[in-house]
Image (cartoon, rainbow, N blue to C red; front, side, top):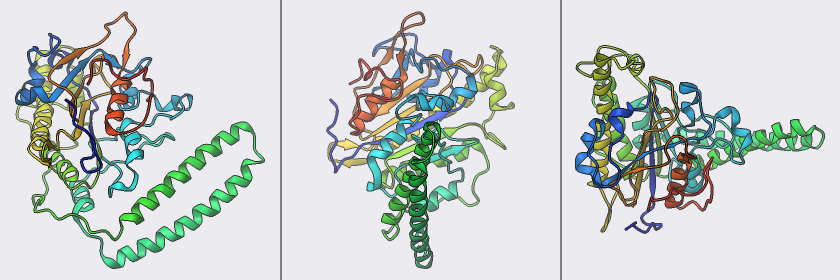
Length: 392
């Protein structure tokens, strides 16, 4: 039974994007329904089997391009085709963030390890990511000195004045330009409104104290990829527990230095192009099982954190892990590996949707279901044809 969402027990959403996907043979169960055997990559999640759902047969209709199209993971729409859709290529986390507004210090947080992010605004802007652990920790818990807060207030006031002038000039110009140029100005106005919104949100929280925490980052900070990933997950959980934000996206690419994984001697990207070479698949499996192990640790932490008498933080947090790549080795964007945990949904099954040769079920149907569970009043998202059948 889905838990009722109230103002006192709001819903959260976490989206974890793996740039290189997951090896399909090790991710998708062979059986459907509740009585499926956990494949290799899901084995670390065994104790949480009733807390997540695995989906197969979902992807983004018409999307091709391999790595170049992986950015469609949370939107279903390529950035160069965004103008064809009413809401552009806004990602599901940012659509939810619009709903949250100023209720939290950070409407959303975007994290990135080893590359770019997975979050896009409705006017086609890729949101920069936090890439350093210390930056994330400071954003959550380090108080801004009074002198700096005063300077920020003055800066906000100056920026608002500049935006007022720019908006007036643009409005006057809009009366004298062609239809094509008018569309460009509309995009410009949208950007101005987004900047104004961010200024309002920042100023609203400027003088409110940040939460206290006994958590401390290790000194010195780790240099291996595996240690960094684990600590990012720790800080994500703390961000949710303190209600500093209700929307987090984390993009995981690769490592620039040491992977920290015993038995892995090659680069992450190289291993995804395995050509079914057993030695490469073995190393790739170590990396991908590390990812699902860290997901399991994160979910377990949420499950043991209570936010209400009858609900854990996991009950109030939808956690999506997946990728815009279905098979990195063949650069396929079909049959995306998608796993959804928590959020009060009825879990515990492998749900398979339309096979090849049949009209596909858009992954955006899943995202629309998530948005509605989050509280967003929407009847479409991206390329959705409705909510996801069989998900309750």
